[in-house]
Image (cartoon, rainbow, N blue to C red; front, side, top):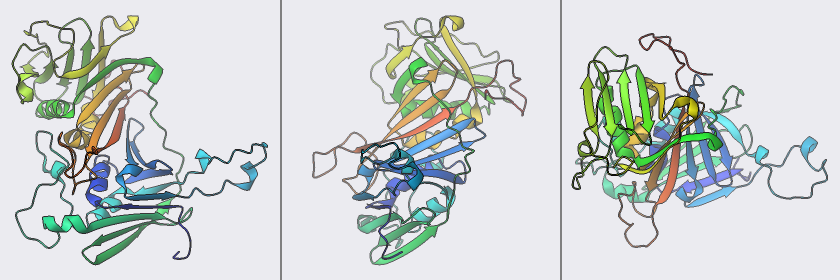
Length: 387
């Protein structure tokens, strides 16, 4: 392969960026990879009820070269079209072991702050290790690179890691997609709920609700009635719990508890005592709720709690989250993660990278969930989902 020009080649100065983004969707062992001129798309799904997408934008790489393969002879030039633009259907698509890829990226020791189970959002920036291990010394992070290459259709995905003169090359076997993966459709022209907020608030709420080990996550949203936005956990062995994001007449506070209220009751009911100053929860940047007439004035949807928990890692490292729901009940959690490609490593915490005016690179991880069917017993292990 040495004398063959690869279809795809990219170099990253920090493998930790790639590891952190891919770790967000690592709830299944394999991922479908799509290489495009603008970046690499990794997608995973489970049971056709949860899907996660991570897009590694080419801005994350110091160099990014894509040479799309030629279109098959039976589909080229037959239509008389002289357009030389690349055919999107010719973008390489294959399946690779995601768990093996993550193990490869952390060969030289990649700290994973979100794997510690912390109950609040943390930065992608790895903490400085206290030990002087040869593979985790902070000084070595400045001399680390990762090269990805894909030479031709059917060839392995090659990953070369280099650090202070040590070079390791791994070749991961690629597989043809079996065609069984189907994207969970989100009807963008039929969005009935859109909430944008700091991802930390959502992460804290899911952690709080998870303490009661619920089976079902209930989402409730209304544009004119309190609680305006609430998450509830039910069906578990303990009492039901709720987190309400309501209007708060309080001074600035960095803690999420002052702007979201956790209510534990036996019957799952709760009342907000906040004064109504505006028809939007304080913690939200965007709050749009427009239920169809069949729903009345409030949107209510149920999802399997264990599936939503699979997005906890993305919640922990993201800066913001966009919560969207369509008429069919499909839930989309789109996480915005800011990566500082100009510094040593890590996500932006609102500070500009040192030595330059350019801001961090924004990447997105998108989770989609299929709602639970109506009238399904929440305590049944064989809960059904809407196909």
